[in-house]
Image 1 (cartoon, rainbow, N blue to C red):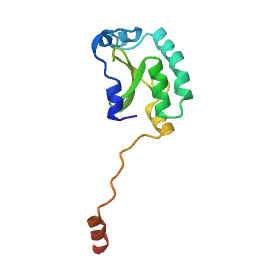
Image 2: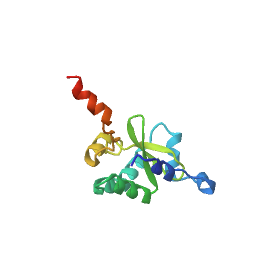
Image 3: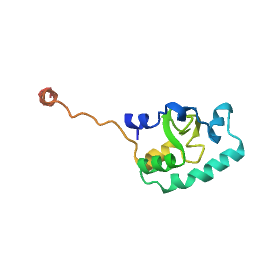
Image 4: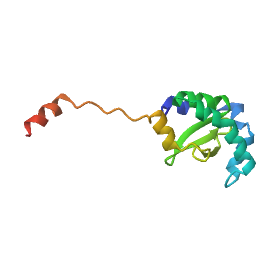
Length: 125
C-alpha cells in the first residue's frame, strides 16, 4: 500500500494531467458542501465496507477515480485525474486508525541482528 510503486501509479502526465472532474473543485473550497459530501459518502462507502485488504480498497477506489495517500498523519482521498486532495477518509466515516487496525498497517521489517552483535550481547552479562 505504501510502496514506491503506488506513488508511481498516481502520477499523471500529458493530456490527462489537465483533466478536471467534479471533485477537482474541492481544492478551491475550505470544505465540501453538504451535497457533495453526501454523494461522495454514498458512492465510496460500499468500497470501504466491502474491502478486506488495502489492495481491495485501493482497487475499488481506483475504479471510481480516486486514490488514498497518507499525509500529515491522516489518510487522505485524492481525485485520480486532477490529484486534488478531497478530504480525509475519517471525514467519510473511516478514520485511518480504524483502517490500519482492520487491514494491519504496513510496517518496515526490522533487520535481524548481525552475528557480531549477537555474540557481543551474551559476553556483556
